[in-house]
Length: 112
Image 1 (tube, rainbow, N blue to C red):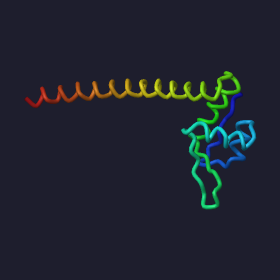
Image 2: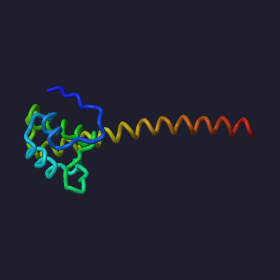
Image 3: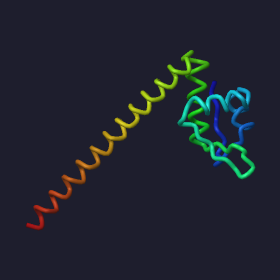
Image 4: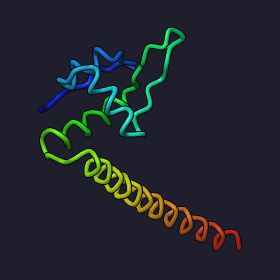
């Protein structure tokens, strides 16, 4: 199921449930099971989901409904995916830091 998320900052639970194709109680249950989904609460105690929360819920939906993971399996898969993203991000930073170090060494040689 390919879903395009509207370009908004916040979504109410009804909007999120329509985007995901599930009932609001399912979204609330996933929120309780997956601690990475943390909507903010208004003064009237309504949930407002950020764009990143909706993306995370879409991934959870894909893992549970399309890839047939259990809740625990989906939780572990998300952790694994986040770990891989962190390693890829670290590799990018390492390359950038190497370039900066090389440039600084060249500057130091010029100044000497």
